Image (cartoon, rainbow, N blue to C red; front, top):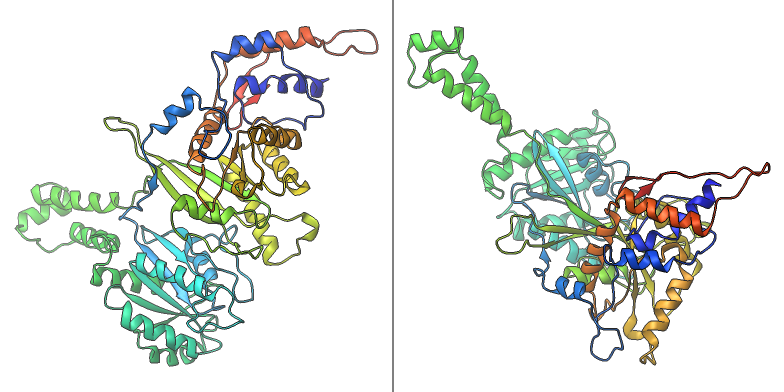
Length: 555
């Protein structure tokens, strides 16, 4: 009986503007009550239509979409200067991703780590904290200067690493202490000495030095890199990480490659504490001032010292981060997810190729919509997360792909909106239906994005309506989701994604009044009474209420 009641309420959710609902999988489709639809249409309207563009036959814009076009232009989000960037580079398979996970504390769900080279390809960013200082780490792929057939995507990985170095305030070169120094290590060191060391500090981390007895022997030869003192570290056990980061902080302060004051919080706190507890006269104090400060905490010098100590303590407060709308880009392999991210970002943010499975780690890009002039509201931030292509469960073997798929599924659960990317030329496959069901089960709002619309041949005035009807019929799990037909290669209608995301967020966070819900429930019961028991007793439903949002949940 309760399941059937849920089916009745589900039939009216699209008319309430609700994009997601936690319930059992719907088995039947119910026709709407037209009178109720008309009464609610003026109050709640979250429809989204396509814009008519040149050489395409699409319906005209409605007034709501025209308002979206008048919003502020989208731009890349400028990273806070208070949080400098530290680049992790090195040759393949030396433990760069493991070191990033160790420093950032993201062993579960962080960068993918496996005992094979070439796992990391794109540059990925992680937030980290050490000694009260917040910064960002950027993980890069293995840096190789000699291209050959065995080094797949070597050129693209090198370009990604160069972008990370140009953005960084410091650089950590990771080497393998067990294998020793190699020719590739020397090539990287020579490049850094010529191009990087004059601007930012470079620190050598000799990884895989778990044994304290032989670590000094393993580290000695890395002095030949000419990059200063090498630090024996172990990303697996955390050995030597603190000493290495302290050296990085000192280099940033000496080179002044980050904002003034970074890396000196602990020193300032120690100096303020020492002055407060000092028995010696401070500058401007006499013996009486020292006695009042030490015994009673009184006097002008005592207040100044206490204020400096309090300021040093306040500097360790957590950084307030602006709220972001997390948008997960989900789909089968090779449907154009990374191409869409690059088109949104306006640059080569992720490596793109015709080879399925090019993207491995989740790659993110943050875009910003500034607030209108004169408005007190904050800017809107969109964090787009590109994920690995998800194949059928039976084809995924335990290994790197297993962790790639797990991170992609985790991105769905953490997202506010999921962009379900599909190939417009291939239609809907069984895996597309599985992903749509996963988004619905996780209670996420969704936007269906049909990529490669420019490759569809023979378009006419009815192609758009037929395509919308086809995708609606094939994807009943997310029939409430708006549909976009885009081309990531040409940029056609990619800008419409922001409007669709805003509408999906609005519906996902909508709260419907109790009176409206009970009106729907009353009409639903009149239309389809609850089933009777064997003894003929009729079940009665008196009341329903929305108890939460994200997703909207009705009890």
